[in-house]
Image (tube, rainbow, N blue to C red; front, side, top):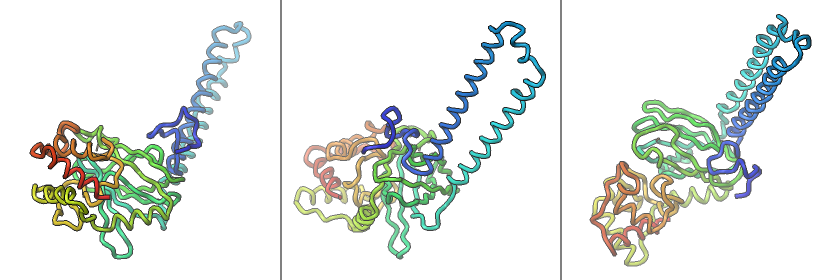
Length: 318
Ligand code: CUA
């Protein structure tokens, strides 16, 4: 994705390469503080050098009482008050909520993200996981809650971080200036695999977003070849549906991520691995090795053709 930021500031999670108004406020405030701090530091160092090196009669004014009043009291009050006023304004702009914002609910789970799209048109709530699709150029209001412990939602290129706290909902707004993929990460230690609790925000054109939404609302595709049908059969008969839902099949578990369109996602295990048949098979048979401590047991009962069939079936759920 081309970016308007210099290479030095690039990075999938670089707060120095903001691509939305909220992150832009933070980056600008950061630069004000870095620049202002550098100017004051250089000024103080120059005065200190002058005080040490200049001839005594030339530096007498430095010890003047007025210098202490101006440089020691007046200047800090003026600078810090100006910074405070600017920061308060920036905070107000960041928590501002647009009435026409799109509402999405994100639930912090150990150690993944449940994403819900409520709908005004009385359609059922769409539930997905670990990937948040948003329309670019439109404000999105996120309702952040937790299912268990404290997590923290952070997409550095789009906005600041906000904690997800059990028993309360924190609301804030994000917006992506342009289509692109913005990586996020849980920013509050939440136990074992906390470091492997990532996600992607996928910003799309409004048309592409609506098409994605329509596709995700559909039930899962029926297997079209015997190999995939065997995968589905194994999935349903092995108890996977106790934890996972695949809409359109009897699997309706709500403990783990909804898998109705798992094949359409960029990654598995909350941003930990790319999504393909190989990683899916590895995850099913040995998830405890790939993401130790996660809440899905390793299903090493599946081997060979059976394992490949289940992985292929899941991968086919686009
Ligand atoms: Cu969730 Cu750290």
